[in-house]
Amino acid sequence: MINQIANDRFEKGRGAQYNPKNKFLKGEYVQEHAEGIDEWEQEVRKTEYIFDDSRTLVNEVKSPDVGMLYSVNPYQGCEHGCIYCYARNSHEYWGYSAGVDFESRIVVKKNAPQLLKKFFENKNWQPAPISLSGNTDCYQPIERKMRITRKLLEICLEYRNPVGILSKNALVLRDLDIIQELAKHNLVRVFSSITSLDEDLRKLMEPRTASYRSRLKVVETLSKNGVPTGIMNAPIIPGLNDSHMHDVLKAASEAGAKWAGYTVVRLNGTLGGIFHDWLYKAFPDRAEKVWNMICECHGGKVNDSRWGDRMVGDGKFAEMIKTQFRIYCKKFNLNETKLEMNTKDFRRIKNGQLPLF
Image (cartoon, rainbow, N blue to C red; front, top):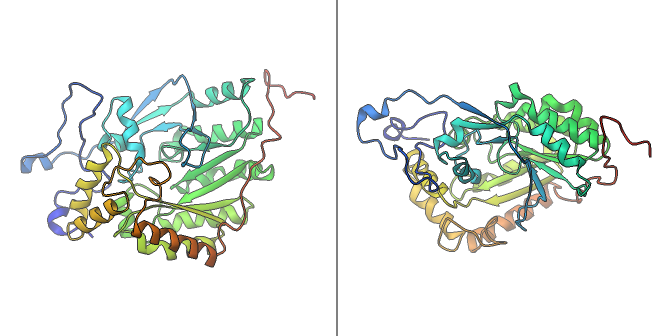
């Protein structure tokens, strides 16, 4: 846990503890370091929503080691505030900081459903699984009000296009009716991200996410309702949650998960400084050890961009993680079958009418 000295300067309910400079902006005013006691006594920042009429929605994923072909992100930025999130860097493209801005200034793509319909009507589209979300969580808190993700699922069902879901939020169960219909046609898979079973760690590392118990309940409910489901035990952070893998995979399997995956944390771009600041404030007693172990998994650095190695790391410790994951998956009957979704039943809809033939 955070010690008392660090706790005095730790903003609870947020992952990042400051706003670093946006490298794409030539001039801006930011507070990277508080210089006086009065500067710590600031009002807790409220979440702001920026509504955007986007031009495009579906992103082709060209990275060969990500495990998805296309992604859709109805929201940019994520109120969940996971400190390790690689998507933080993408917030700089919107003119914001990857730090506190990422989790408190959320861009809402309000025209996402219309864009997805338009995309599916394109004659050049060859049906393939689309991932919700490849970047930020499609079931973050604002979705409860906006219901954009629900509308996107309805469109995928209407057009019979397969869709994958990855979330840390139990709100996914709100849309169980649509997800069940998708499952009947083999058009969906739902993965829950479960990094640990330690709630104290979650509150620091993923401050505005659903509890681990709630996420396991999601797995259980989906499984009982015939929905293909699994988990991502990701990211593994050496010295923080690497020793939790056995219990996580065991609990997931008992809840009904059939598949599992993992990644090793990597801290590219601005994320490195944000995570370093958080780590030394949250865990001052073991921060140096954790930081050095992350470096050990990525060739002596934390900002690893090597294809094939960047997601799972390399070196002795990374190899140990990989071996443990393989053993535990076998022990708990995970990844025994390959999950393939239906792309044969895709159909285009003109003017609201289904084709006769």
